[in-house]
Length: 343
Image 1 (cartoon, one colour):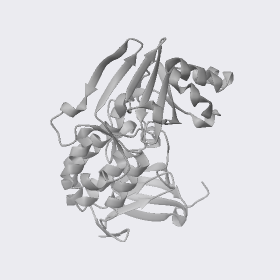
Image 2 (image 1 turned 180 degrees about the vertical axis):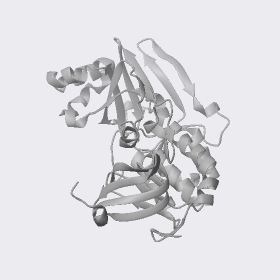
Image 3 (image 1 turned 60 degrees about the horizontal axis):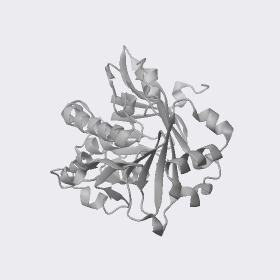
């Protein structure tokens, strides 16, 4: 970089969180509610990323209950899934029935992650110590005597430094913070990938089905998204490039083989741009902290994509971190007004 230290904008806060996904956003809200000064760095200008996990489990809705937010959250666009099954040529094989759970919210909530994250960050913005920096990328860690003291970043107005008592890496499975800190994840890759796409609903489709459809050795995942179906086609890991070379018709054929009733609309998959490929991964770092630094969510452990458990574990990480660290951060931190530290 040609930027000299004198030209850097220098900010300070008590907790710097890198990554505005579920883990980072929820942690920022929980800390801000308790009066901790927190700055959240989000690399994108908004939260509109399609085909991200959209499932909120009953445990997350219970957290929202405790925060007094569940009623307003559930006024936003969502679907409720009370049952999940596996449909085979021989009929329905087994079924998960969430309605039997002893909770106020006995269902999985399907809510676009962009909607959830905008809600959480808007709630956090009600507290004076919260700052959200959009379109801002952390470029490196600030380290002094082996202790992480914050990050250097690049945003819409140029480069800067954000100094913090605690830095939290919540920047996902490809975490730059994890890499900068020298953590190496232990990887276990399941032998599959998933191709996600949407197709419109028809009146003839009948009652919404949620779950998997198995036929001829293939599994097609299906979720009712209100005005459309969301599908996930499981493929052998590493086979996507060959399918891509074979053309979009290779995916259309696989979809119709799994679910013949889609023959009337599968042509709407006109190009690979209509499809999002999720490379399924499972990994963890054996140790996810250093002095001044904590990793949470996918930055610390990439979970199986089944039922979106990674999102819900990420939120649990945020809850546990907030419960353990709030009093320490308040005791040693700074009060912030208008984004500037008051010492």
